[in-house]
Length: 73
Image (tube, rainbow, N blue to C red):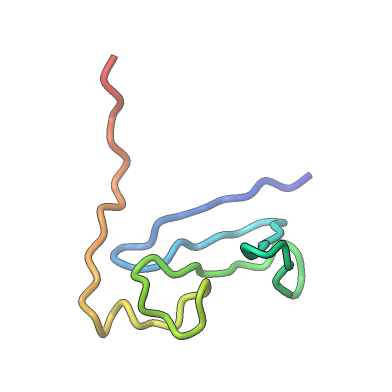
């Protein structure tokens, strides 16, 4: 099975690549096209195509903390 990769884009969406299923709160599955194709999920909350990114983050000046934080031992 191919691996799934989720990448936080600089002040932008989460880019998801790999064979994923996306299910809404009611249990309905989104039609994503070919499995393994990349999708971009909104993080700014302003997209009109939620849960998908529509580029609104760049108009809003969205700033995210997308750097991994080292865990304290």
